[in-house]
Length: 193
Picture 1 (cartoon, rainbow, N blue to C red):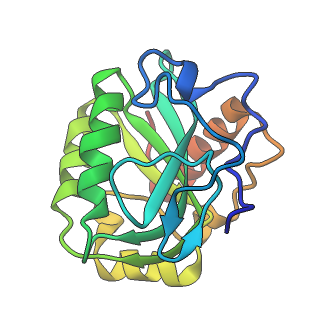
Picture 2: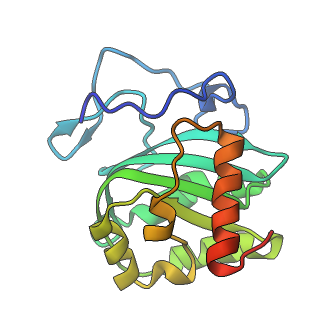
């Protein structure tokens, strides 16, 4: 896992550590010294910690004018034991929402497991953004991950599953990826913003 870097091809457009509104503003990274782990496995030092011991993120892109953010994740999303959603909501999402972000794309291809629990923080997140026409969409998740999300009934607040796993994002620019997600949401659930 130590060689899996967050997506870096959009760094010419956005760098969270250089964004004065980002929770990771002025964060320094050591490219050679690995300190963060998911269980016993070191992860690449470019991943950002938000308070979870098993899940890390990278804010890949934020467009404050359009009101959206794209975040990539790595690790195990464990709400059952560690309440990862509370840490994510309080340390990262709340700050982005205060800055006018109301549409969230979560890239989950490196989320290896999901252990659901209570959905109250997802409900709170959705309530924070719904009046602005906001949404939360998780793309490229493993089948067992979105099935556990389904069992936790997160479909009331988060869009995920096979329809969103077919979205190709890596060669695209963030604006094109955002529009592709928005169009898919409109086609799948009639969600227009």
